[in-house]
Amino acid sequence: MEDPSSPTTITLRPFRTTDVDDFISWVGDDRVTRWIRWSTITSKEEVLTFIKEVCIPHPWRRSICVDDRSIGFISIFPGSGDDRCKADIGYGLAVKYWGQGITTRAVKMALSQVFKDFPGIIRLQAFADVENKASQRVLEKAGFLKEGHLRKYTYIKGDLKDLFVYSFLSTDTIPHPLDP
Amino acid sequence: MEEITIQSDNKPSDEDFSNISLRLLDLSDVDDFMEWATDSQVAQFCSWDTFTSKEQAMAYIADFIVPHPWFRAICLGDRAIGTISVSQNPGVENSCRGEIGYVLGSKYWGKGIATRAVKMVAADIFLEWPHLEKLEGLVDVDNKGSQRVLEKAGFVREGVLRKYFLQKGRARDMVIFSLFVN
Image (cartoon, rainbow over all chains, first blue to last red; front, top):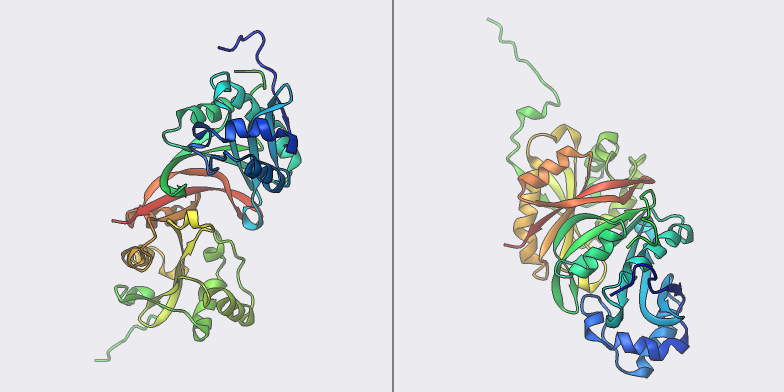
């Protein structure tokens, strides 16, 4: 249980190839990849390739770090063309760090940066599985507005999913980064 | 005694609006296309600006409409009075959804024609595209007429997506509607 007087300090930074051992400790865990499009990866070689070819060139993907060691990720995917005013946010965290408000803090940190990094973005949106209560709480605590229940919206790993859709606008107020 | 015949020209209410059908649109429909495509009332909530020339319309028909995966003219008799289409979202994981869109000449509004056209599409599209689980419709929050079309056609309102659609440079709030197979 997190001590509210001294929460674990987290930082966000781009991924490095040297993150491979830490990366594999959480991307190799089905509980972390359960709700997202990512597959569980247990091969070090595959993780290294994934870091080099996907995570590092990504428009905006950050490692969530404790003491500069990777414990998870947070990504922003800007749209293009007609979707250029929108971006999607996604995240995942190592199980041993769940329940401390870390993901919520990481999302708030991303919110404070993303509209400066992508000035054309007006709408940041997030989709959470209707059964993924933890992720829904992250978004609500981070100040996102729940907009609706999208039934049979998309396939994730071959299953047809119902998702809640949330948004945070460039005009919305970011809750204080240190608020739980 | 002289019989006086009252002529009412161009008065749609004399016509039989039950004779609605869907068919492919082609270049020979360009004059009818121009009727609604030059109407700023019709274009108000569309992504496109009113068309200014027949050449522009013919290029649009040839380059966008004809190759489109599912695009139909809404016809009264054999005359095109609007269009209706179903588009797929990119990515195989999104193949379960098709987005419906429609446009109707403004003098034909308020007669249930668009609703009938949407129902006709809903009856056919799930058979033509067996991978489809739902039809989606995105309607501007201010476009009450179009929201009523989808509600009358049996769509369910799933929420309002804030600043979701860039319409002529402005980000608009959109109501998202869905209709499920069976």
